[in-house]
Image (cartoon, rainbow, N blue to C red; front, side, top):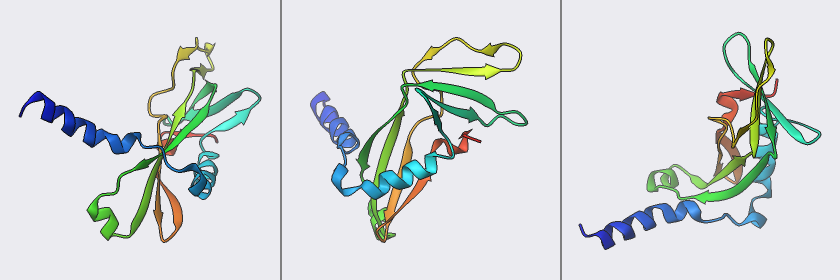
Length: 143
């Protein structure tokens, strides 16, 4: 396979992930996503807070400049379409910095970016209703 054909295949395989979803058609999806994430992220003043689920004692995190990015429309497979899935959306999480807290040392130094596993929120639409199917709630909690 020549380099030009490989490049074309690569571009065509990632292009659907770069398409921005039509914001005006998904306000309900955003509402469902934010309601779900209210169990993961707590907003206070100019910071956001969460806790990494870590056995008996969760680890508190402070997040700076927290924001949701997107959504991005994800392509549906033929199988998903046959199973009645209408749309897939991905919201991403962006933070400029984060730090953790422990009772012995207090707050850690700030680290750039966002914590590991605090990534995207995937929603599926079936019969006109949105449902969160993947999120950081597996690893983080606001409680």
